[in-house]
Length: 416
Image 1 (cartoon, rainbow, N blue to C red):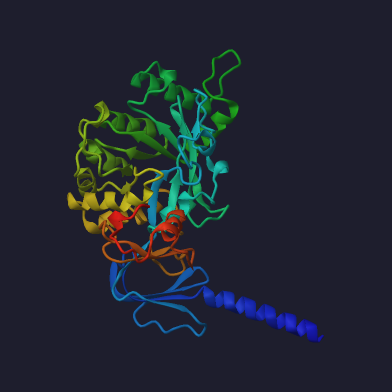
Image 2: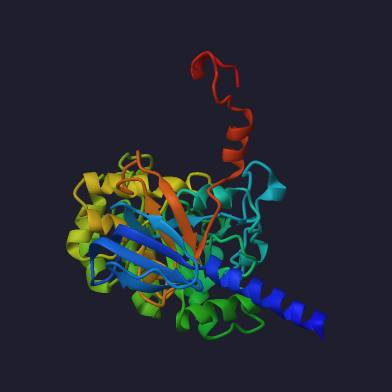
């Protein structure tokens, strides 16, 4: 009996310590709620059991011990969106066995899904999340096919089951024409329309089918209720995408959109959001002839929902630099932060878990040293699902291991 009491007491202490460890009180922050409440000055945020419990001034410290963070007016935002990338499914692009984001079958396989290959222990995840990013969209790339494949939103907490929202289908149209199309844009749309017809009415045995049975059921599911991301830049291709999506009842999202400013009114009327790279301003190919640095500002003014993407897997941390660049070319500052937080969350239907600071919502928060859209600012504290993550990665550990702390000569004179 005495032993049982001791065990119960030990369990009570353990659970109590866990509950206490989950209490975080952030005081006197400039809180970008990304809701109708806007930005709140000198405001406290209480996190408990993984969720935001209170937002207000002079919140009383909870009875259980809490981690108290004195923000001293520093900016507090929701965790940022790392864009469409291959975090967790690609380690070193040049090493084939570490790259699971691409499929090389030269066939139309919309059923290709990168989610089963996700590795939360990838060294790239800590590098990205300590820079203030808490979620990203896994992208797929089926080389030689118009259908790139499927991906999904994932929380960068290092968990094996950290996927949120529904799967997303990626379609690539434009200059990167598939080998299946005879290198013709017209051929792309011909085959896309035929694929949709196959999904609606399966072909007979005598017909030459483009899709497998699984591929047809996959495409049919997206025609019914899914989100389809079209990777497209040229204005005329964007308009054709809008017509295609409307004709087949697809929920479309434009990725790339270098010339989207040319058709901003049509995008706004169709309520189709755009995920763009605000740094794209050079005519690197014939689809980018109209690229310009105020693309985001023009789209925002027209009423198009914007998200920032395009920094890639190994440079995902530069997403905020891209948003800051858009702000320097006319995009309102609040819209720049929204393009990294609330907008991508809303576009992909995960606003109940990411993208804003609201009561009873999972706590995904970042305390910044300064303006989060300035390259000189850094993420000082990152909270994912209510837990403060260690601010370290493979790079920081290597730095701490090999960089002398108090060298006699300046750093430039020291051999690494």
